[in-house]
Amino acid sequence: MVRFVEVSPFNPGSLPARRKRAIESGVLRIGTAIAVCSTAVGISAFGQASAPAPADSSAKTPTYEVVSIKPHKSGDGSGSMRTVPDGIRWTNFPIASLIHGAYGIVMDSQVVGLPGWASSDPYDIEAKVDADTAEAWKKLSFKERFKREEPLLQSLLADRCRMKVRRETRILPVYDLVIARGGLKMKEAPPDEEGSQMGSAGKSGSKWTAHAQSTDNLALALSGEVGRIIVDKTGLAGKKFDFELTWTPDYQRSAAESADAGPSIFAALEEQLGLKLVSDKGPVDVVVIDHIERPSPN
Image (cartoon, rainbow, N blue to C red; front, side):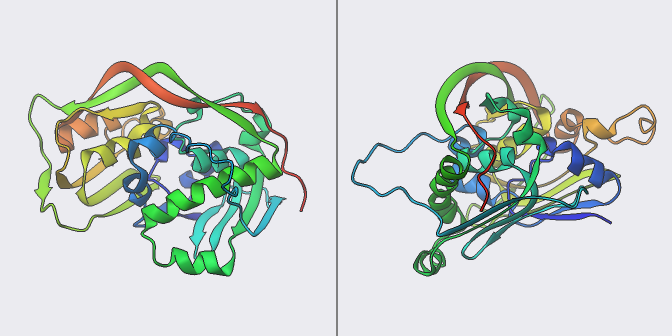
């Protein structure tokens, strides 16, 4: 059985092909942090690329103290993406995944100019901060730490891959998340309840159990599944809900499996949660890569 442990938004629709194949022979396990990142940075980071910080010529560019990037040699589909107390430890992931984390990318379409090798060649990536920074991070919430680490990842890419980027806003197809005609079917949770989520994906499909989560988190987490940014237009801002969502991703809905396939994500949202996705167009921030090289050796 192949297993993955990730600390990242629950985004099954954006799984690389080799990980999708691994799911078909095992289980994708996603911890309780599946939406902590999306809670942390909101639409600015996981729905659309976050706005660049104001220039400060006197500020020192934040960097990791130690960085290791090596080609992954196993040739299988297993991988792990871990956040450790002093940095990150990713195994068997392409540089594209690092770019996604550094710039808050949900979907591949939000990155323009990425060469093929950056999405296909797997690497083992480990990056650590100094002891003082790691100690300071202990006092931060997950979302606060993520915001501190995002510029570190950007610096890593600029240093090791000589990457140069610019940001643009383009009008692209999106989905509006609205309340379905039959009415909302989620149970509202007390506003002061602490949220938690657990997601899984396997041969039988995908399942997401959530407690005290907002509809904007739901929109962010499922954007990769449907291939577009989802804009929360439910009018339910500030409210939290308990829900369970079960569906069969498109890549599993082959003719051979169609008889036993569960509902699509579109049908599941309406039938199980009382929500609907409506096709629309809207502004989406994209990252344009002007230059990138394979990672320099250690």
